[in-house]
Image (cartoon, rainbow, N blue to C red; front, side, top):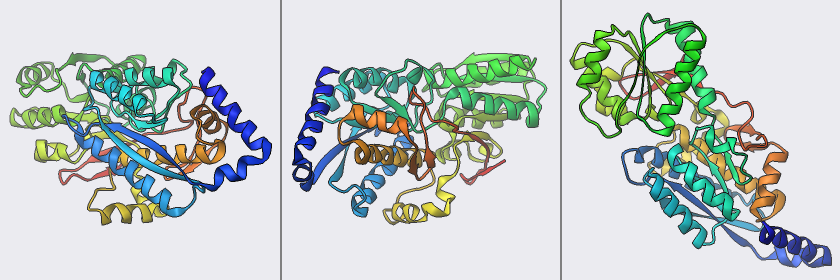
Length: 371
């Protein structure tokens, strides 16, 4: 902290002595690390993250809106593995990068965020939804996505008000993200006096869910909430259809990927998913959509837009406060930032103010419609 403060003071003194104009005359390149899964079972979500982050850097540089700053994206693969994420965080420290868009999975973001906060590096996660990440009140940790504590109740309200099932099961993948969401949904249902007849964990990477499905059939479950990612749920959906188990399924944004249709086929029809708003359908974002499509990439994924907005936030902080991460973090918390997600504001913990998830129905062609 002392080193960062000395840096800020030195820059202020430099400007006060009349050298600010000369200092800003030369463009300064600011590197932004984009850290997420290039490899591993959920690399599809990393594709969204890197697509959005890269495009934001490219379009901001082209716009000239950054004045004396030029952004450079530097990409790192953490495979959504906690140990690899810590290794990546330390590489970013050693590479001298001061700003990070990432990580993606909550159980990777949590340990990596400790490294960044210790080193005074500003991290803006576009995808990690665990409340634990920000409830510690770390100065250099922010996000452009909502919380499990928002998403879980959104799912539970829909279940209670619209689905109205008779016998509910809640399943999770035993990871921080999935189990956190599952427990949030379970707790909200219990508050409403609804019995959860089964609360089960599965192991990420498993392929055979016949024992789980048999138990759900014995319990006469007609609605299943799943906390986790699409590879496992896709198999559960497919195997449930094969065994004649016809419950309605629901999951978080971690299952909302077109590849769930590749895995589950027609069994993905009618899946309920909580997702952020479809920012690719906003008229104001049409130029970004066109630029992404021109590269042969998909602009529809939710993390495309949360990642784009994370870069925009960092860029706006640079314009307001210069390249010191501490000053940027303070500047972002002090006033809203206009982004592709609309105006964003953060609280003292680094969480978005007023972020909302919607409920969507998934279709077997890989599309979804908001309910």
